[in-house]
Image 1: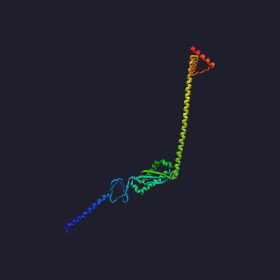
Image 2: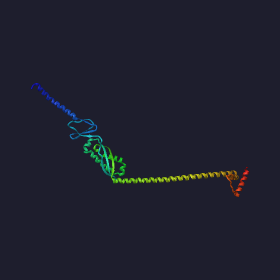
Image 3: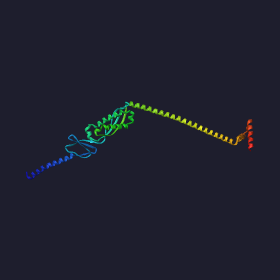
Image 4: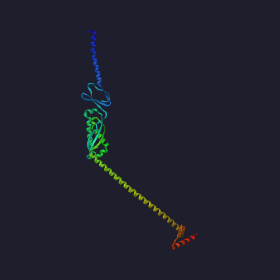
Length: 298
């Protein structure tokens, strides 16, 4: 072996640790840098204990000491549609279909305090739904669904608060009844419709009677008003005659009467055809008086 070979052997032996050190440094960097996606959070443990929770972006850990034990998605999740039986306050059996949306805010609580979060939430929702519906009658369940949903959501939030979970929405998809209850409700609905129709017809008949009575009252009022106007006119005419008599004396009244008698007799004599007029003796005397008064006037 010559000197060159010995040198190469020594040089190669010294380069090996450098290469291994470089590889070790690269591995440490690789293990120490953690890039977390926006939709996740990573739970880091050190010797089996919680060390840190890594948020989205670039994070650094101590290689060989820290490890990412859990990768938890923080996206909103939907539980499968669940159906549970419940009994209302008026002893009606209903089947309620519910759906719950949630997301994990604190993964360190979720991974260390509950094993199956979906099953735990579903069980909690089922119990709360039965308890809340048991406080309400069937009509209230149907008409106050929005209030019932709000109550269920609040109760579920309180129950899962220790699990680091936020309940974003709770929905009651449907409330189903058994066939016997549906038939009874249909009969009740038909009876209620018939009752309303009878009330409407009765109110219509009552209104017609009221309108007829108003019309008769109006006609009577108008007739009374016409009679009153006629009586006022007659009274006015009488007062005018009385005033004339008071001012001109009895002769003026007699003159007017005589004038009317003569005009009537003249009109009777001018009728078409031939008429025979029989005048009582008292009338002849009245006419003679009238002619005499007219002559005197002329």
